[in-house]
Amino acid sequence: MTAAAKRQRLSARLAQPGLITAPGIFDMISARLADRMGFDLLYMTGYGTVASYLGLPDAGLATYTDMVNRASAFAQGSNTPIIADGDTGYGGLLNVAHTVRGYEAGGVAGIQLEDQEFPKKCGHTPGRRVIPLEDMVKKIRVASDARSSADFLIIARTDARTTLGLDEAMRRAEAYSKAGADILFVESPESEDELAHIASTLDKPVLVNNVEGGRTPILPKSRLEQLGFKLAIYPATGFLAMGHALEQAYTALQQDDTDNALKGQLYEFQDFNKLVGFEKVWDFDKKWNEG
Image (cartoon, rainbow, N blue to C red; front, side):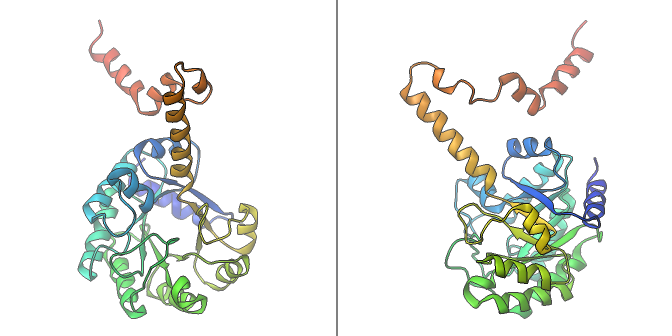
């Protein structure tokens, strides 16, 4: 499926009723697995991508090149629309325009931009500071102007809730909406009442970030839809599950002299071959190298 077709598909889905659930992807294995599951949307997590690709914390250490290359690979390797974390845009206004154009050219369906100071930090960790509202409004305007298609979505995230309070976060979200953001994202609300206020007040589709162990209570998807959220992302679910599974598997490998401890816990090798695309290799060989 072409990038344009995926963007149109997401735009059409946003116009339909119902909550859109987006699992976090952070490497090509997670992207391919999620792509097979029938989700309407995938979310490229900055935290997970930086951790898996660079082995570093999500603290402003990844570059534009690091992230746009990952976003492009994920988009090319899946048929599901992807929203990709673009952090702060990797610099000033010119950098934001360059970042938006690069992500759009890479094939993702939308970019998330946040109002943190540089260097940014993961949204559920302490020590985050935000730039002046007027500066972020300019970034959103630049981002909206830089894209070549209105189907390439701009997701505006504010991190003001934790340090400046919910009222300031809402003021910022409303300003970002007026500046041209398509989807609004108030990071790390701390109660169901706050979630309800956010979803019922803002005038654009609203995204909720569900991080297991984070600052925001994770509500059932049916409740999130009742409150008025349009998108629910689960950025950490995949890499937390992977970390737990790998730790268990490696512990069993270290402590047991047979593979009995791992039976029933591993992906079948032949199925994994199919996941990474070996069937196409075999078909190619059959067509060109055999007989």
